[in-house]
Image (cartoon, rainbow, N blue to C red; front, top):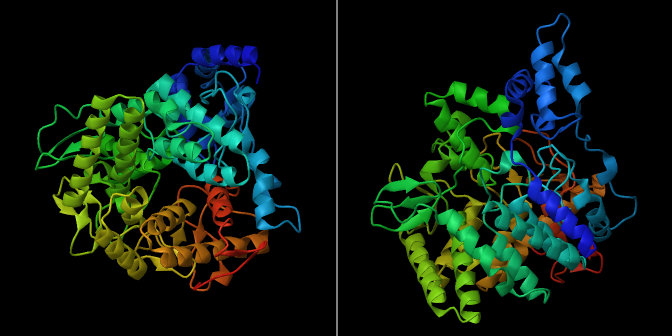
Length: 531
């Protein structure tokens, strides 16, 4: 992109408004989503108006009571609906898995010129890769795992442009939204910008110090309101525990139904005995976690699951605090490199206090693993999930803690097809029997960093076999996989609020990165050890 074109585009981006579809279309939005005009609630919020939004709203108000008015017909006449995912994600016959992934990157790449005005998309200045299927925009934590594969495919240009897009989002909005849609602005996702910056630095593309202003801004957003908290109080993303330790939780600024899942959220709140706004906030916070949804965020009732019991904001998560620890360490290092000694010492102290708090509140000696903590009930969560390996991933565990956590994960979460997500079968997608690519990478990378390479290799081999089995049968990669007892019978994952999606960004990324390792790959085929 030339300098002149980029400057013109940035000026256009700066003029973009942040009204969400609910804010913009008011009673028209409620009618469309409540009456379920579309099977997928995301269809309408991603639609682009054919006229000025206010004119469309005025037309709706004038026409809705006329004889023969049909809401679906009105919407289709006044909006350009998003494309339905097609078979473009299916491989050409005879392509290896590696070749298929490399060929997918252009299919999943979106350009700045593909940002129509007056829609919900938040324009970005540089090209980026979307997950695929119904996910037509950039997503925060998905993108880090996608970048792993882009780097392996030699697409460091896309990695750099995506990191710059995230830096732009932080500069513009003060944080990275869940995705580049106005209806995602009120929440973020697991904070992996620091990991992206480190990836660029390891690959020799950019120095981490170049992104220090954005790292500081994002950290401040996550920690807003922490200074005034008394013990056993919480505000926004911050929780002050009884001993004064400060940790974080997932949160969303809004307490209304998610716009992209409006009808589902209203139905969920209707089943609950709690005030609707509390349920909506916890549903939104669950979406901010990236684990939407599963038993992790609900009452400890095992397989007896009801999403109406969701209590995300009452839970201090292992993975979120691990990632913030990694961010604080990177800020300290880059500050020191720039000669900002007081700032470096401040963030080293931040990281030290966070690691001590993780040890006190999230390490569970009896379980021999890291467990999420319910700060409202004052008790650790009993169920184990794959986030237990996040402290290994960021280097926050001791050698003893790493070994014990690995043993617990092997005994309670390992499946024939890879590392499982949780211990419970609930019908939700972030539960057993599903396996997810980002969780495989967190486990594999974390175990390797503590010298537990045999276990890491075992997981990698199992996962590659899972992905390749489905690819050989259906010539595609998918969002998630069912980790069945016989990996040769692998199928795509199930559960959740929408059908299984093909594509798929983070599966492509993690798989492409794992294909580098000669311990699991021979030429362009596979060798599995212990799978």
